[in-house]
Length: 299
Image 1: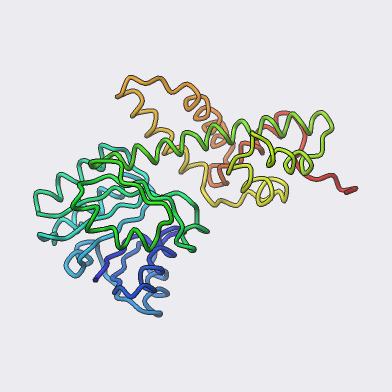
Image 2 (image 1 turned 135 degrees about the vertical axis):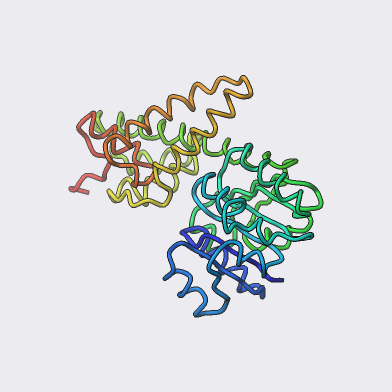
């Protein structure tokens, strides 16, 4: 199968690499040309535009950070739509709003193209291992057509319904991790302020009902080592929270905890920390309180 892959970032590069390793021919495009050159050096074909990708590929995968870029790649000037053909499939792995997914699905349908919104979760490690959670929206026929590729990149793949439902499912994930990271930060900063050892507390909580995936990943890898290099940046999470809040408004569902988390992350970005990891909730609360969640030097 000829796979077009557009977007070779932290997630897209390992996902495309796994598709190539599975025996598929890859036609790749990326705004940063060195990433394309490095990829095709190990096998694959470079394309100069999304339209050029579409002229060669049976399936086009898109993995970019914002809905605006997705729309540009698929429907804009020199976009995939210019060379779309009957029987082709578009898969968008980005986290977008459901309106973007439906717009792309409708545009593809007019050309005989299938469409899946298939945002993922699991971080670069999950992308490398091929164990991502994949939240899929689209027709049953498009899901069946794309399932072989989804199986390469995902460990947990769920089809939620028509176009847009995959995006909504992924946004629920983002709502939860934002609120949990705020709660984790509050709990550990409170503990350290009152003299507790955060390493000891972490080890205890991971065996308690409060254990959560964000705690498991963030504390030993980011917070305690004092390294907030982004695995998933504050700016991207804020984009997702904005999309979730808009869906909430459209649906008449009050998203109180999500709105509060959004306010905290807006404050974090205002400090100039938008490029830090979303675990920077700790960094902001530490600054306010005047403590650091780290293992005491005497230990």
